[in-house]
Length: 155
Image 1 (cartoon, rainbow, N blue to C red):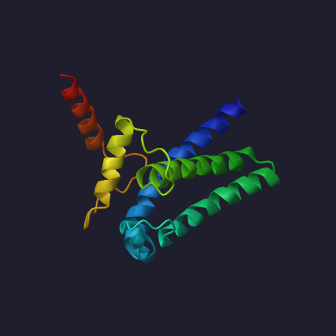
Image 2: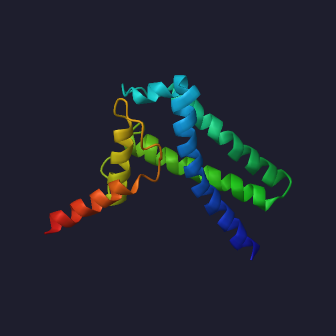
Image 3: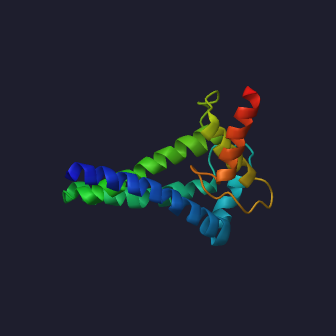
């Protein structure tokens, strides 16, 4: 039974991190730490950006939770750290690898969820766009548009 609780903690932290990413992206990255994030909105092919500092900042809680969860055998802390870690990996694979192609793999992989989510993220990069702050979950309108486009193409 405890194993199920640990899995639920991992999943809860994973999904909670999407909210944290959205909140931090909107109010911190586009707020008082814009100085670190603005180079991410300038797509000039660089592989390293000041924005990458946020990856380190977000990794710290995960590292600490995993460390203390292992050192003090506390599976609640370990599960929380793993949930944050898995979100970070998903974020990296989607945002840095798939969307921005900072690591040139997954170029020909696509589905309706990815097309809709990528469209929302790329629109966020438009000049003066103050919307679409999420990373793995976009506003519902993008999914509705993508699924409608697919249905229209089938007719």
